[in-house]
Length: 82
Image (cartoon, rainbow, N blue to C red; front, side, top):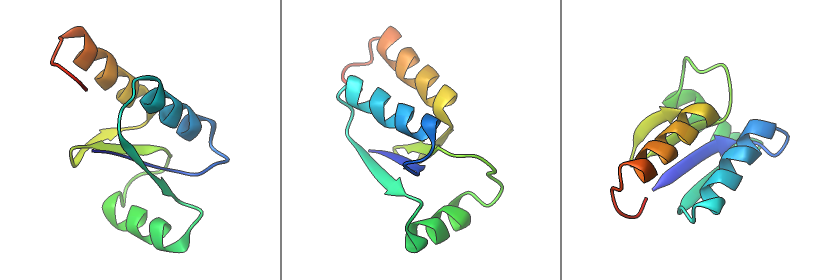
């Protein structure tokens, strides 16, 4: 499962959602405009200064660029459905 932590005002957050949708990847959007989600974000990524922050199967991927590389690498190496 992919989790995208971001907000609706962040261009890169929305691009990450779009990327997941383009590849029919199941994801959960964690809206950081909600206080409970923001608190979870701060606990999970205490050193992060930017959004989005993305996890895939509970592994921290990073931001949009890292997520894009992960998707491309997974597709390139033909590891089945991503």
